[in-house]
Image (cartoon, rainbow, N blue to C red):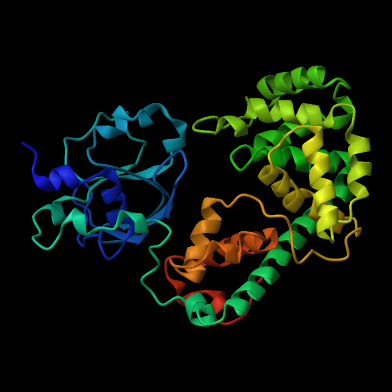
Length: 400
């Protein structure tokens, strides 16, 4: 009969133990007996793939540094049972962390040089440890770094100052996009092709940005058939024959509405025989004001239903930087239609405002959402998990 301890314990408990330094036991060792020091447990991945991304470990007495992904299971056999051995998404896993120890797997099961770490042995016999004490709802967003956070010190009593900082950060992020687009104008000499590539990349929706951009380069807008059905066929063939062998498509655990096949059909309907006219109509929208942004969104949504949040993401990440690059927009607007909140935005908001904050602070303004992304990339990714060196502790806004 299973003990009460075993009945309660889940894989998510083990993930929380790995992630949280206050729960993670000291004296971890590899299956070969080498000491393991966790410099950074990695970012908690809420999407398909390994449980933690970009972890940093130090191994052995010489503290050999290892960087890569971490996968967590209750038992070592779960690696094969979950199909990870044949999944290329797990090729960069450097540590397989399990609760229970087990015999070593076959040599071809884990990626080369992947360490095996049993995290349960130091905890299983401790009378002061119980999985019931772990608040699983606090992970990963509400669990904040143990070190003093400069952002909390600077902004905990001044929401206005935090929002002002996020506006500045959002402006810097979008101005950076505008500078990149301006450089593409010079390099490519084809305004419509630049717009086409940027929009196609936006259709990639995070995981397939690179394949969609490659597709736009493989089949330029001038070579698209005028009929949407023919353009759909041409893009699909180019995606399968020209792009996939070079830049693989990500299809695992992708929502049906975000699947490459569906996005390609949407792109064909939007661009086939209509790109110059589409650009002219969008040029007529004054993106500095809400009415002009609504005009642009209506144009995108009328061409082919994208979903309001996806269209808003294209407005933020393509249309506004594009207009800034051409100097048709005097500055980044202070308010932008909001796109969907993603894991990065939620995590950064919890770090900046704490676990009890109201998401309405930022969720209604796309510029603030961009600001959260910018702070995460320029500050948190650079200094996590030691917040003491964060530039937010010394200035009111992150550096570009």
